[in-house]
Length: 338
Ligand SMILES: Cc1cc2nc3c(=O)[nH]c(=O)nc-3n(C[C@H](O)[C@H](O)[C@H](O)COP(=O)(O)O)c2cc1C
Image 1 (spheres, rainbow, N blue to C red):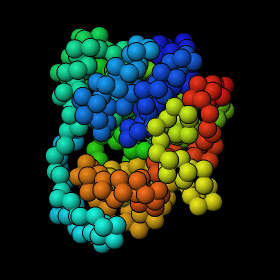
Image 2: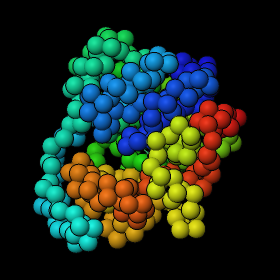
Image 3: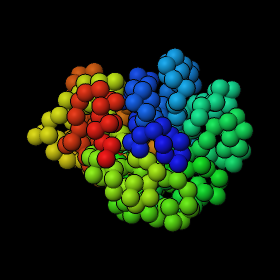
Image 4: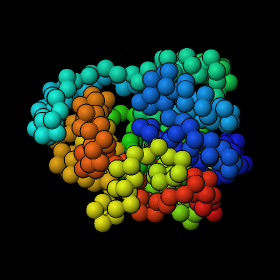
């Protein structure tokens, strides 16, 4: 049992929005004594409620993860220039160039209301911190809070808010970096050092995340002071994961997709994924513009997923992507325990 009380296994299932973290994946984690986090990101509050009900049909041991909405401070001219740059690509796929969607809070308030009405044991946040009122409301309802942080300064801010623990996420992580200010270039300190730094800065329990692909790495992170480790990429090929077929195929095709890179190309926020034609062509031109850029590239990504085209899809993956194995999620998690 970790100090945080997150299951009996020190390897946890990270939240992965956009399909991979299904209710079944969360249930499978709980069934082996691990702990899963159900993503709220990109789901309407109603869809999120359905996902949560599906988990609760099997277990109450569930964490949820929410995207903290951005303040909307993006350079609109830069986003529009990027849209012009992408236009020929969209037209080649027979797609209309979308109007920019400048505001999108991911149904934040409705999801919070839902969690206050029917609390879960753990709520984790990424892309920033909730306000003190929101944090207090969730805690009064009975939830404990985890904040995703990517450097010691963010760790201190989370500690000042009074969270119960930190998810310390390094540059090796697949998917979006949780860096609070999307305009900043995130810290690329190795995970072991980030963990030690966050512990020293705050004394809070730490869940370490980013690039974990083997039991040896888990042992080193626990030794460095992590209370538990969270894996995302390692579960992308799990039986219970909702990873799209084209994404699964790309992960298995190391010859065509040998490396991951960090990019803003698909969403305007720094994220790590397999390098493909889209990231290689457009990343240099991509501005910090989440979530508007995310919405601009949604039509080609939907088209790519439907047509099995890996070069127009965001293929999120961490640096451990070459070690990813298929099979039951419970077995994948157990194989990472030192
Ligand atoms: C496909 C994918 C989707 C992700 N979605 C989320 C998310 O919704 N919320 C979040 O906090 N982190 C998200 N992450 C990051 C993970 O929670 C975690 O930090 C990361 O997967 C750890 O690194 P690893 O992939 O190398 O194991 C995502 C990661 C991936 C690969």
